[in-house]
Length: 271
Image (tube, rainbow, N blue to C red; front, side):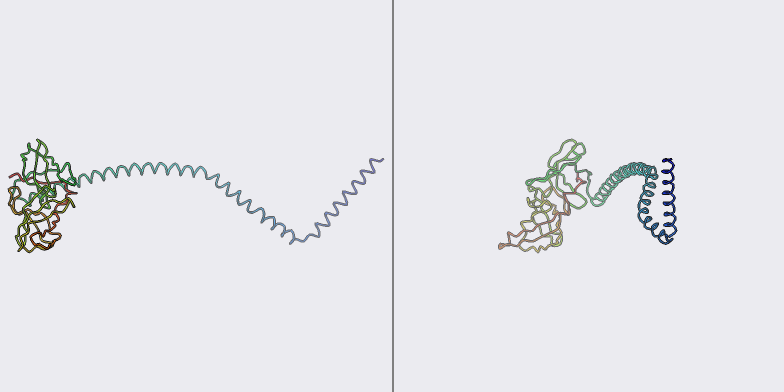
């Protein structure tokens, strides 16, 4: 009997709660529901977008790593081609250098047709404060002997001072022990040119005649005197004239026509 009373009371309570909920729901306006939905949407949308982006990123991983592998392979191929191109460039530079050397020989031969000559490469340079010599790759086996003049396409280089069977040592005109009898091409005034310790491309001209007119820019060539150098070989250009209180002591500097720092090919005059 007691149990039935409790059940009846519980049923009444549930019925009342259901009626209350129905009343509340019937009184809620539609626009209020929409407002709640909008607010919930503002909270949920960023999370949903993030989950969508994460899903897309995960699904694209396979393509991403595939692209990385392709790029690595392409990089290896490009490095290989670059190495091959560098090798071809080196070979072309060698060919170009050889062609330049051959042209220099041809130019030298054409320029000094009056002389019998032997072409040679410079294989060693011995440059110091007290001397300036070079070694060339021909010697007594090629008919080379001491005191033979050595020239280049630009002008006078020096003369042979010693030989072996396959090489020869050349004392250049810029060596401090070198002395050249030379002449100004315009006035034909003679003087003596020597190597200096100051600059590799400069000579000092002394014993200039007092009546000689010497100007900057004048060309200087060998006079043919002295027993070593033939007449008329270009030496260089007057760079500066230094006047002194005593005119007999005046001197000039000559810039050599040959750039000894870049000298690679020469001709030895053998006759």
